[in-house]
Length: 274
Image (tube, rainbow, N blue to C red; front, top):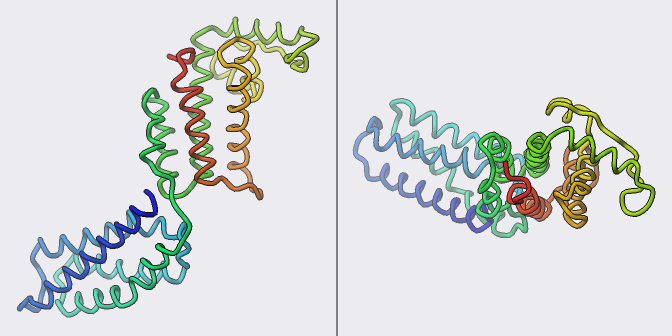
């Protein structure tokens, strides 16, 4: 969801609140029982809790303001779940709307913050398996709400899973052979690789071969070239930055770059087709 989409959602919510308030002003009954009306109040509260509240921190909305409107919309939701006084509805709607634009809308409009567009990231699913989509959908969900570090860890996990499955498909014996060949090289790009492996199952591969070593073997094998290896190494570095406390943040730009590289180099790579 982009900043513009967030602003649109806030404006729609504000419009819905005003419309519901106007209905109550004209309503002649004291108790609200009509399902259509209570349902509208529930939809408004649901939109706040699901679409708007989780992303406010990205736009500089303070914790006291978040708590203030969390309480307001909780009250609105509670009213909608039972027969309630019309004047109670009117009171809570008035309280929400009094400073809503100043507290929320204007702050978001002034903010430089933004959330990664899911429309772009979701393309990574195009050539993913059903198993990989479990990780990738969680990664997309994290990105939607600005949890970029969690998203980075999950998308890398899905990509490594694909690489490991390709090794399984091509044969563990061939993987072991390539690693032994590399270890014997005394000059050139692979001369510093001093490991050899003897894995016989996917679980053994996962348990004994580090991701960095896997990338080296894949390059020597010809499944990726040196440039692709370097780009994947950068993604792995970001994954490590994301997984451990430190001063190197994962931004929306970092995440978008990683998603793009992993899509093109791993999931869309004909050599990695399962």
